[in-house]
Amino acid sequence: MKRVAILISGGGSNMLELVRDMVGDHPARPVLVASNDPAAGGLVKAAALGIPTAAVDHRPFGKGRQAFEAALLAEVEAARPDILCLAGFMRILTPGFIQRFEGRMLNIHPSLLPKYPGLHTHARALAAGDTEAGCTVHEVTADLDAGPILGQARVPVLPGDTEATLAARVLTAEHRLYPATLRRFAAGDRSPLFL
Image: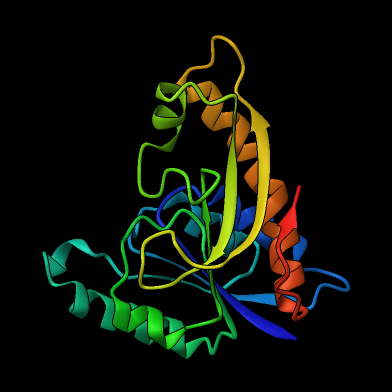
């Protein structure tokens, strides 16, 4: 049984979908939900489900990313995870942190990578006149949003879409894609899943 730690920064909707899927014959179980924001709503939701939680507030560390990451790493490594999932974790991690989990850290990104890495993905898709958008689960590497693709789900861009309506449609796809991809990854299948 693989042990999964999940990093969040906000409400944790993707975290909840991952956790709800890790039951029965699933090859993994959640062992920690951690956040860089002690007020993240997802921490309360995880605790209510009986999952251990941790918060390491990034703000007192100022620009000291490595000191913040050392504190976060202590919490994560104490849970002995086999897989680390980023689920709306809004801090860019240093190469040193990423290397600790090389080949076993996943992230979900709200675009069809390699299109639109980074932020403002929905605005960029709308500005480009794209007819479809979507989300990607990928392995995390030191290059932002550039690791091997493990899964993608596509959604149409509809006439009259705004950033908010497109984001909502993509989030629904994320909630299907991330659990399905993690299930395969935890079972040792790294072939890309396309929904």
